[in-house]
Image 1 (cartoon, rainbow, N blue to C red):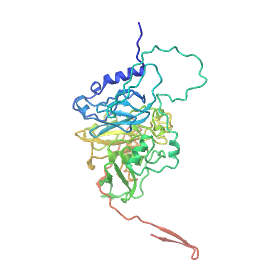
Image 2: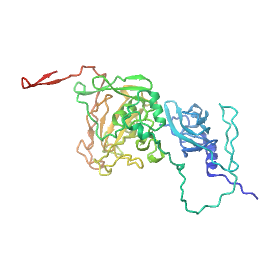
Image 3: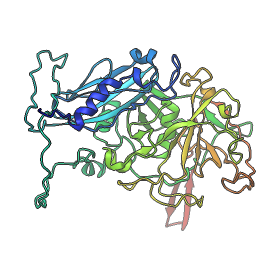
Image 4: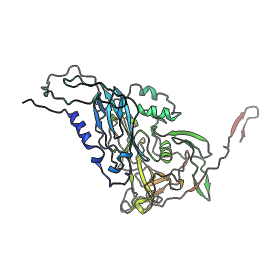
Length: 445
């Protein structure tokens, strides 16, 4: 009797088709998940002709509302998330559900020269007919001969970084349009600053106040729905962030989550992802998850405004901020966050309001709160929605408590800010001129 066996890849493809969205429900029907995730993304490479059904954590009755798209002709994706590798190249597969979205990268390589594996011609460019044929050939006898000429082909489980990326980062300016930002993201290139930030925010010399309290800028500056303009304390433009771009600095990240209520392209929800598996390399950032802020479970944490974990009506999320090190907590060694091969997550986070009481994305400035913590939720500073605008630090160590202690804690309360628009003012410009004939310094302001 002839033995018929399926290759590992064929088994994966078969399981993917059987699973689908309906078979992977992880939340009750009719409830919107806190974040949208592709839960069966177990491959980075596909061979031309391969077909695979991606599945998300969306409930059954919302699967039909998902919108799938591909960034290139290398991979075709249909309305239910079934992807077909059409030609060699790369594609970012995106899926949206309401205000939620996520994406994955697929790289297509040439079909291996295997007996019995053929590719029928596609008759309709809109509907791919390429289908994989299971490998029915007997398993080959293992070759124990030492490999004296290693195959230069990259490991299918890894995503090699483009040889052009280093050249790109040598003096690259920030992206100046959303189209450029998306193009850069498709190659794993940042759209903003590339210098890894230190763990402390840099405060603006001038921080406007009202009634003795710092002003939290209530006037968002959107050039369009995908472009947010970051201004300084005087209302002058400093830089822009684009939805779908890649960013790593504290100022860029605070502005991004404030503006779009989501994370940039170089972030993944997974807390254990490998930089060697990502086109982002050392600029990969981890963690986008719910933050309860429960002070009963963590008594050393200060209570954030209206947070659901303390009975409030706003749902917060957290993300990692990769810094050059953190030596404030003995549990976290002062190491580089991402050296390109491994990640040490450290203790720095941004925590922000993501959903309102009805689980809708937040658009009301009264409900938009963004905080930075450099010592794992012990102390916080509020982002005031302008460059260098950071509030008064409050929390456990500020109050004299022992860091992360559930017995010796003393968190000071949130220091309120005043929600108001910035008052556009003229900067004070001082001119210093040395007058050698008179032997004095002349100052004009």
